[in-house]
Length: 110
Length: 111
Image (cartoon, rainbow over all chains, first blue to last red):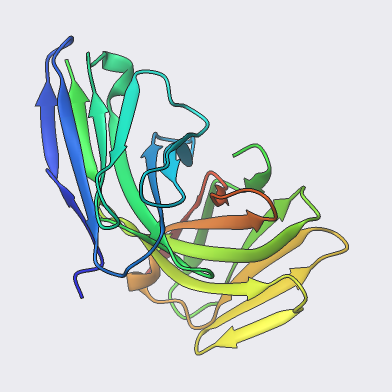
């Protein structure tokens, strides 16, 4: 099992550009999450998906959209990147008792 | 996360025990977790404890839960340089779909 995988690992964008961060899990979990991690602020939830076809906003959803393509994949899209979105982005999936994280995408917006 | 608080930094000598503390505010927590994050990596689940337990031991790790004081601690025995990382406390709350994380404690282990 690969667990939770994310692509790309690193990305540099110019302000106003768009991109999609990809996430996939092979553990047959229903719930999937997108977090951002900023220094001194821990992890903040952007969006989550309780099951295929459903998505809900988390703590900091502005400037992002998500798509739960199927049970395995949950993508995060930045339509018009801003410097405030410079961060490390983590995808996660969850069993009833445990939450598993991907390796992260380090995004810089200039 | 405003519901979960941790101290920012802890420094210990190699071979000593480390104790990382966490306080939380929501009494409807069901599970509490400890995650480890090494530089440039994702979060790795270390251990978790169900809210009706007081203690859980797993090799060098001991988790203590004081539900009355809403206090969780992680003790690492015989701390090694490889234990240097950021440790996150997180809680699972009834009715919330996502975990709530603290800001993390950076553990520095000096040789």
